[in-house]
Length: 129
Image 1: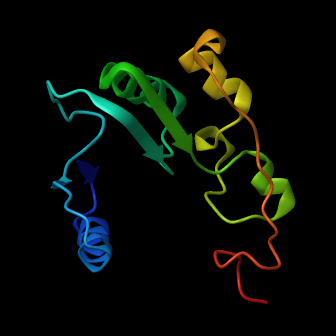
Image 2 (image 1 turned 135 degrees about the horizontal axis):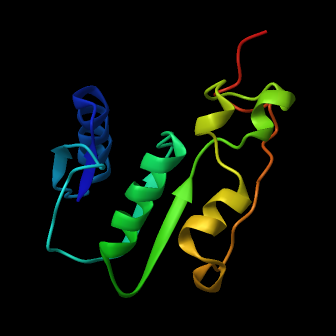
């Protein structure tokens, strides 16, 4: 199951999945309100940058979608991007830090929570020079 609030993003994902021969139930939906009784072995939250209060709610919901023993993977832009000139939103209030993520999920549940630097010179998301 894959969901995004953007129909365009879902369309692109659907094409990538079709090209890879992968069968996915794609949904245009809002992660802040979407509901399911289904439980998943893996829930990913990718580049979902929201104000902290709403982000905390979404991650709590995502944890609730996990099957016993399941894993939550969160990936997004770090607040350090602003000083480093990296890609992503310029509003520090919606960017991640390991401390923020740890405080939401709880350090006892975390396998790995860190900032990973990207080589902006070779990164396809880097602004053209």
